[in-house]
Length: 462
Image (tube, rainbow, N blue to C red; front, top):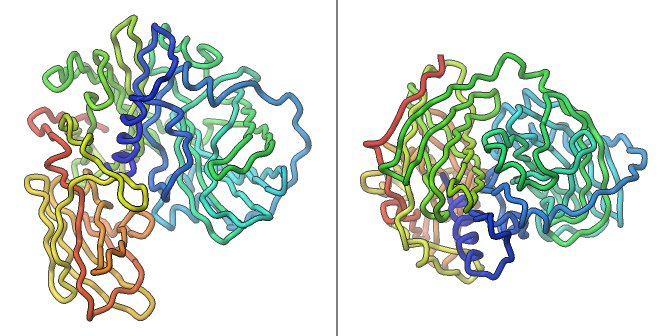
């Protein structure tokens, strides 16, 4: 769990107050249009919380191009986008291992888009791409308006992404499309754009990109083959019948899936609001956390049912079992979120003075502590060595923020932090100065989440 998912939820709940025209038989839980808004800050999650629902998806997915001109084979700006972002701790290294290179390029209105490579596990189709513009890129250009076909049939997917500007004209990123819809009952899948499109193990995808989140518009059309061949025999499904009705009305855990790229949890419950849905933190039998990547849900007023699919980091090679700890958000707390001067939503936080010479402890009460064990002041950067205890390695390991006396902020978000294992981390930030005073803070998680360790459950892997 981290602040990207948290801020996304705040935005979606703010959007719930807007007037949207939806079919009467559809109770949409998360607004896909919010997923497609331009990001105001760097994304740190490969996939955001999204929803599969026809009404709003129609806004983003309308019509498809019929003509596909010849592609140019492009020399990648970086050797591997997956490798580059993995080295930056922005995506998991498994995307590198199970990727297939494409390097297909298309230019429109002075902007060249290259599909560098793809990785597919039957749950997510992750596409690594490069955007090169003749003009300066002032904001990260995430894919905004895009259309899909699977073997010639129109469909739609929820998606989320991350990436990085590598110079003033070039961006590299990964968008992960949640292609799996078999967690939904057949009557629910009819609400997806294009209807109940079956996703086979091997298929041809048409991807037409029309706009990026920075306002860049054009026509970038791609066609490529997708296959599950690399992960055949490496996927395991565990059916369950775990009842968590004490947490959310009629909440049931239906299935846990293990792939080389994802750990997937599938649930169903009575319809409710976004804030009433459950969230989960995971540890394996060795005490290692599996961070949430994102989730998507679909609900109907006709059936009064809500279906969720949660994606987490894949398990380790020696993992024998994983334990899920469910939690819910404390009602009304996020309504108190306010915008700061940069337009970013903020919640109550805990803070303490940062000791540059000795250990600093920032307590999150029953959820654990952030122990800043060492601050290394170098000429061109500062290294922050810290560890997370108890539930924090899975709850929010990348939520720390350092502030100086003038209000300047240094976020210890995922793309500046290296995970050293054993719940220890090293962050690299801009140079701090020994003659200045700093505070370190994090969201007050005890006010935000009600973690139910009494309802935790374990699923065996082997």
